Every structure is written in structure tokens, then in C-alpha cells.
Image 1 (cartoon, helix red, strand yellow):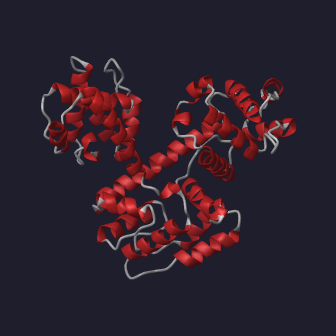
Image 2 (spheres, one colour):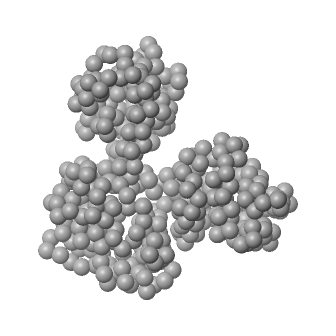
Image 3 (cartoon, helix red, strand yellow):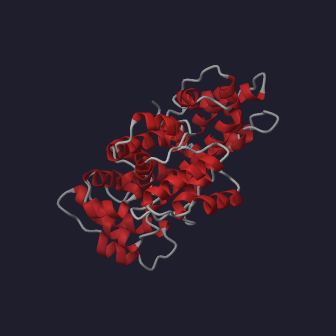
Amino acid sequence: MNFLLAVVTTGLVVAVYGISASPVLSQDRKVLLYKHHQACQAKTGVDNHHFSHIEDVLKSEDAKLKEYLLCFLQKLGFMNELGELHQEMIRKKLMDLHEDHSNVEVVVKECVVRRDQPMESAFGFYKCYQRHYPQQGFLSQVIHISDEIHNKLRAHYSHCSTESGVAREILDRACQGDFAEDAALRIFWHCFAKRVGFQNEEGQILEKVVREKLREMVLDEDQSNILIEKCLRERGTPEQTAFEFMRCFVRNTHSDVWRNPISKEREQLAQIHSKCRKESSIEDTLIEKFKRGEFHDHPQGKKHLFCVYKNTGHIDELGEFNHEKVRERLVQQYSDPSTIERYINKCLVKKGSPEETAYYVHTCFYENTPDKFNVFSVL
């Protein structure tokens, strides 16, 4: 696979969705930073948990994170191929990365320390660097970009899934490159192309916009021209035009970014359910009833729901709500701030026990949301 084609979707998502990070980082740097992250994540197998719990992982001295940091620092130019820290390059890069230069010399002096192994040098440098720049460090930027990509993609996928009524399995296969000849799928991609700005209301693919986006992310203009030539074709209807355009793009930009983010969430939620079934001893018959929206005042069901919401981070051990986590989740699904606040005020009500609280929250969201939100729907 041509490496530049693998990079295209990274840049596409960053460019299309207007990803923001540190004000110092230009659009090109954001794309490059995220590209390095993807390459090193693929190489080392480090999972997203490492980046959402960076402080804890740094304390644990995780081997995969050390390998990832070595890869990442080498791609940034902080270390050479031999695993040696490059002091002058680090000084220059830090000046570029951070508006405040007053701390740069201190970081260089304290953090550029050679250790016995290249991975240890990389890990030691980043721990020290993170101490000086806890919120503005380059991994913080990667996390920020990654979270925004996920949230923006999820919002578009969710909106267009509801609007089109496309079957879950058909959409999941399309995101892997297997596009079924399905009317709802055509409506989905038409909706998606309009929301990201590739297509106007009349169904025309906006070549100028697409070229501008590709120019922001592709270093080799020839690759951009190939994609434009191959994919920009008007078809009989706006839906068919979007369908063929997106099929061409997905198939020619081999990247996991196109994978349905809702599908990823379903997989994660299914794993949580599996864990909680053991903890709650919930019976299969009760699971089936909950899937259908037939909620019963049953201790096993309440215990299971508490376990699920606890593991998703929406409720803690004491039954207290993580309001920001809940709000973040609702923002992915609903665009109207007043609607989101109405759901929060109505449903985030603490009851007599954590289990009762989880049960009330779940039934409240199911009864009051237009799409009948139900965590059991993944099973």
C-alpha cells in the first residue's frame, strides 16, 4: 500500500473537521503530529487506554508506552535512529511547539538525559517533559485531536444513520470497503458528504473544496490529483453521486479512520456487558426483556446497569454522576444544547442506592430520548 494513501484519511479527517489543538500548531503540524501517532500506535500496538490515562501509565512504566514514545520521538526528530536524544533539535522543536520559551532551557537541561536503553531515554525524557508541560505536551495534543476526530465523526455517523435508516451491518461493511447496493446506504453517504462539505444541497461534488482539503494534507500533489481524477464523477442522482464518491475514497484511502466509530463503541460496550454479566449474574431472559425496552424492577437488572454505567465512567462507586462525561456523550448524539440540558436535569437524579440510581437514569433516557437510548441494544 502506498504510504501517502494511508496518510490521506488522517489529513482528511483533521482538515475536514477543523480539528483544533494548541494555537501554536499550524494545520500542517496537526496533521503531521497525528500521522506520527497513528504510525507509532500501529507499530507498537499501544491502545487508546494509554492516552486517556497518561499520568497513570507514566507511573506504571508500561513497556508498550516506552516503545511508542521511542518511535514517536524519533519521528519528531527528538531522537536519532540510534536512540540518542538530539539536544539542539529538541531545543528548536520546543521553541516551535510552545509559545512560552522561558521554560525551554530548563527542560533541555533537566530532561535530555541519556539512559542505558533508547526506550528508557525516550520514557525518561517524556516523563520529565510532561512534568513541565502537563497540559500542553505533544501527547496532550494527540489526545485532543483524537478525541475531537472521534466526536465529530460520531456525530456525523449518528445523525446520518438516523436520517437514512441504514442497517447497522450494511454500514459497518461499507466502512470496511464493502459497499452494498442499498438505498438507505446511498442516503447515508449523501448526508455524510454534505455534512463534511464535499457535496452541496443540489448533489454536486465541490471539487474546489475537495482539492483544498487534499492540499492541506497530501504532501505529493500527484496523489491528490489521482484521487480527484478517480473519485470525482457525477452520477444520476445526488445520492448515487455521494455513494460512488465515498466508495472510491474509502477504498483508496486504506485507513481505520473510516471504520464506523459507533461500531467501535458497540464493541467496547459489549465487552463491558460481558464483564458485568458475571458480576451481576443477570439471567439471559432478563437481558432479552431489557433489550426490548421491557424494564423490570429486578435486583439483577439494577446491579447490571450500575456495573455498566460505572465501567463507562458515567457513575462512580458511590452513585455520583460524572456530569461532564454524560454531557460529552449527549453532545455526540444531540446538537441542541437546551435539549441536552433538559435530559441531564430530568434524568440525572440520585436515588436511594447506586443501583437504583443507575436504573432510574437508564429508564429515564430510554423513555425521553427520540431514539430510545438503550445500552442493551448492542447485545
